[in-house]
Length: 162
Image (tube, rainbow, N blue to C red; front, side, top):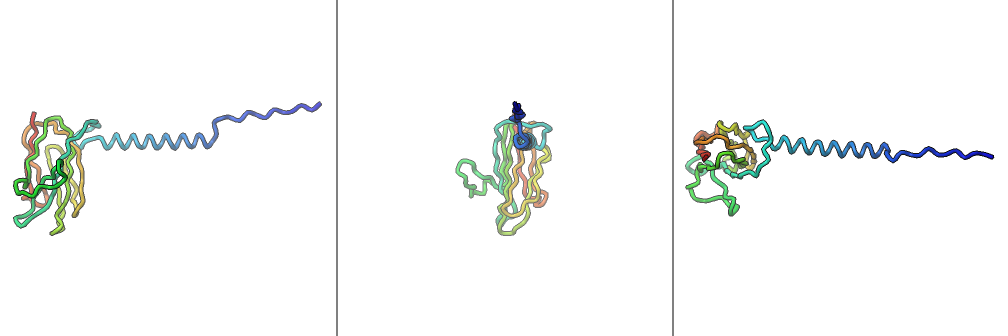
């Protein structure tokens, strides 16, 4: 009588399963790393998970020179009046601010920038229709100036209220 040899049981863990799990784990780790690092405001050393207050600033010019204008978040349109030239910005202390700067200077094609030294906010030189968003925490009270290094006449005030 010939004895039948038993086939060894195959393991439910295959090489393909291990590779699939490793790829998924790396993708998840990469996503977590991106979310963690992108949640760190420029003036903090740790992530801030809060709802940001969005401020939209347009850098442009008219016949009188270069200036900043404010974009309305209510209507989605910029204001046409000259009362918003280099507009004052008001936020409460502790607010996470998402500052959106957009170069809308199509006539001269000049680079634009925006800086707020007190909060370590410095945009890159933005070409026409480029934009940059910088997150920062308004952690100090008082009045702080924002300005352009490229066009010194472009400046305004950021007020942080207690």
